[in-house]
Image 1 (cartoon, chains in turn blue, brown):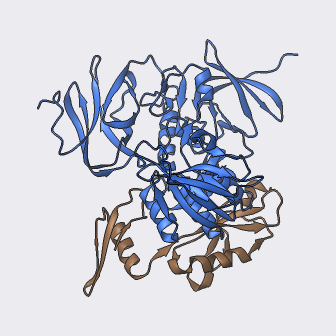
Image 2: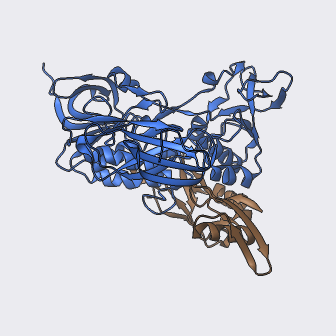
Image 3: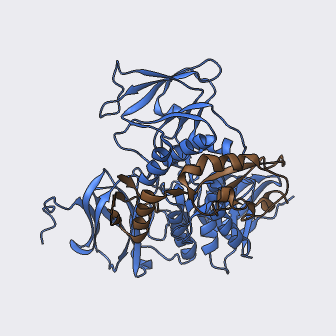
Length: 424
Length: 119
């Protein structure tokens, strides 16, 4: 028996904010399959019930579910987009004309063909095991996203008295959320010397609720038989190594960790998509196409964003540019002084009038300047009063390149003497 | 006093001073920061988001938020009001669950479209 294999112009893996925005931006003439492993679209936004989403896109402060719903409604009106939920991609293979996607769902195993592939897999939380916490392995150790799922979707309270490790945004949001539900939040502990989350979340989630934030301290051991009973917290040195003799002990029944997010790129890796070690996502050009023709990467799979509005924006770029693929002529953006810059490449053959760059600073900076130069000549600059690594910045740079041009992206402290190569 | 503006992700560090002539706000990058600073000195407000129990097994809780900001000092009292409610019907997002909660002028509204989940 031969199974009918459906052909699509575009297959998008993941129907979170990135996948939804990409699907919405695809031209109506393109057949699009949007694959989601969960029972409904929306991704992590479903459980992000706090407000603050959509300030850029909709000029409103929406909750996560509301933001997702706007996109879900718009996508459902698009006749060219098919959404398959409870569907899990098991294997993607490169073919002569594009890609073959194997997936499993209640319908059984299925194979579809696609000319282009958009990877919108999002990111995953780093777990307690990944940050070397020693001691017992009782229940009650969970990620902040896990706790958020318990409280906001399942209606279960996973703690009575908890310690939060890591000052990532979800950790801060959950500190407030648990406090609102009557949980005794002992404090938020951060091994780094500066908080990882947005300043506004330190204010509205911790300071507003009198939840203490302890920097340069980390959880070194967990105690408990079946359930977490207490944790050991130690001060750390500048290299984040625990200092012997600084141990403190706190009784609690849960340890909630918010220690970073990692782009999910298992599928990209099986397709040999070259990865940027700085973003932990694929290298892309300004159309969000990876270095493998026809494969795009968007949203938090590309790099972890701090605003969903930006996730939607970059994903839209990919959706819009699908099918405009001609032979590419890529030039790498040379960067200096940033934690990372996306896109890392510019395709000169599909250059529009401007390119949006997203970047993060390596460290906290006061009075900094970003400059973009072509062949050593500055074509764009922007000054910042303050930059922090947790806060991603976006600049729109008018770009006009010809073959052989070199482009560089430099972030430097303003009062620093100019780099010797930049002789003016 | 010094505090971070929470109006947008930029998070400007504001210096707020109460004088006889009014409230002076410094460090704000935009007009919203100025307004936020002034309110913090006189009547600080916040929006809050939470969940409400339902009778539906497939969706044990539904997310809600205040439709507009409420006085900061009333946050836990508003939470108490929210926790008194049990949702027994299937509502779309935007449905007002508690009108004018504690006379704040703000409504508690549903933010997850229950009709999409419980058809």
